[in-house]
Image 1 (cartoon, rainbow, N blue to C red):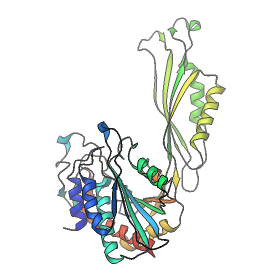
Image 2: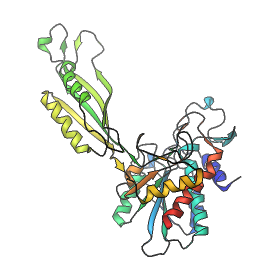
Image 3: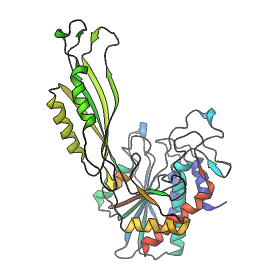
Image 4: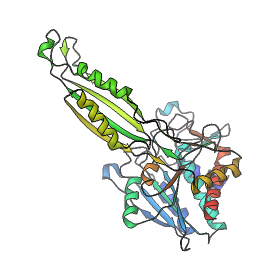
Length: 382
């Protein structure tokens, strides 16, 4: 059994459902410290939801060395109905060339692969001009409040420079290395409450129907072209996810209507600009309303440069593919690191079974993923 596969299995065996780490970070620290990594815990959050965070940094001692950070999470989503799994989700199991277990693809294989890649790189390039870091958290699948964001803010305050970032999120579609993420859209959520006056449906002159009042504004919002996107991002999308009004009675005009909506926005728009445009539309329709905003993450984009080239070459040399750059999908912790690191790339195993029953990873992809990570380090050290 390879070192990477062994470590992957050891991590899967830890039932680290958010925000629990179950000793994963201690295991990783024990492997990194002999390599010269200074391992620092930055745990955060209330006792009822305590988040485990690890910042590990190995300095090369070479003046002017660049810093590359691997970002990942030890937490996994809940298993779902245990009886639907064909093997215990926290007992690593092999069937038909695949390794099964919760976190197999999201993202314990990536953590194991990077740790072993770092071991091999340091053994062969101890004096290479490259500082290597790992930022791991046990709260990426949850609220993501006391995890990577907290560590990034601490690093910002101490002036830590990060030049390149690899996020171990699963990105492959058909084959390992066929796609990597060089950016993500931002996420901005709104909860809109439109106020009317409740009354009997037979006496509309004595009431004010918020549903009727809202229709025009909601139609305008749904039909607005917010931006045209760019070479890397599709146009910004506005989607309503929930609409609720009424008392349950068929003869009552409701007093209010609540609409949940979300923007997935490109770098062509900003959260503030979107807020201003929404407010303008609502006020043009003379609505009486309250609106609460939640910014889930700002968009980020890494245009082709040193890191993209290093990743593309590593994939080409290891698996013989020309990778596709993509910004599709949801959010990742890369959105936090992008605030202090100019080049961020997500690269990991297949995303076909993430969060599903019988989550798995192809065993044949585990060593090549480790080798891709090692090759990226080698390319950046040149």
